[in-house]
Structures are given as structure tokens and as C-alpha cells.
Image (cartoon, rainbow, N blue to C red; front, side, top):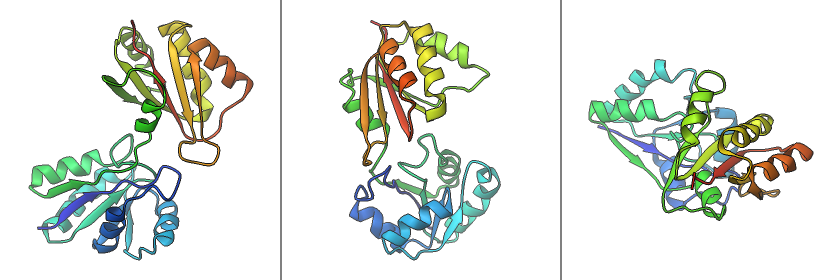
Length: 223
């Protein structure tokens, strides 16, 4: 019986990968990558020559059975996403669940995850928090925001740059203009920044300065 390794990859700075992760990527029989072109650059930088196979949200339902069979046959396989820890707003859950159900051992390595530094450097309470990932784009969005308006714990969201203004405007509407918000952008990269303030102030900032890059939003809970 083989083993599935969930291996975190850097969210920006290539130095943010562990020695253990590099060893595992070199030792396994196969690497499942969300985008083989993106991961190929990282693996080349790390001098990893292990063969890769595409595994992403559009094909994971079809490939899970075959991958589990390979694992049951004795292959060791690593799953990586384009950035961060697999299964956190990325493919990984379906395969992990299938392996658990099939009795295949799963091991998740510790490593980079974007929401952790965003939460810690937000200055908002982090003893209790909820990770929401991406809000629904259309169906269910209003319902979700209405529910979260009453959430007392700190909330964490992922968002794309072209939808940030809409989401911040939603926070002003549903949570109130004075709700504390922290937006971290391009974490670990050259132009990393964190903008903190009220929902109204942060919305004004990014309306005047359209954002670029990967974004994590941390929102204070209802007092």
C-alpha cells in the first residue's frame, strides 16, 4: 500500500518550502499538480525531476479512482496546488476523502497557507476565527453575508483583485461601515502590503488604488 502526501508549496517567496517537502517531492513516484506549467517552474527551481500529472477542479472527479488504485498498488504520490496547502480553497478534499475511505494512508506536511500570516498580522482577535474562503459569486451570496453579519468570531476570506471592491462594498452594506477590516495582498512577495481600517476606509483606499495580486481579507466579528 502506498501513501498520499499533501505537500504545501510557497505562496510567493520560493524560500518558504521546507526541507522535508523537497525530500518528499523527490522521493515519491508521482506528483499531482493543479497546473503542471506553474508547478514545473517550482520543481525545476528545486531540482525535482519526479513526473507530474494534472489534478485540478475540472478533472478531479474523473481521476480520483485511478489515483487511489495506484496508491493501493504501492505507489507513493504527492499532491500540490499552485500555491499553499492543498485542499484549502484548492483541490485535495475529494482525493483525501477517497483515500481515507479506501484505507490508504494520508500524510499532510505543515507549510505555507495564505490565511495564517494574514490573520496574525491583521491585529484582529485570532484566538477564535472562521475560515470562509471565497464567498459565493451569485447564488447564496446574500444569504451567506446576512448570516455572517451576526458572526462574533474573526472571519477570513479569499478574494480575487477584480472582485475586491464588490466584496468590500458588501461588507459595508451587511456588516456596517465601521466594521474593522484588514486586507493583505501579495503575501511573502516583493510588493506585499496590508491595509487596515474600517470597511468604509479600506473600500475607499482600494477604490482609489485598484489592487493586484492574491488577496486575503480578515474581518472583525460582530461585537
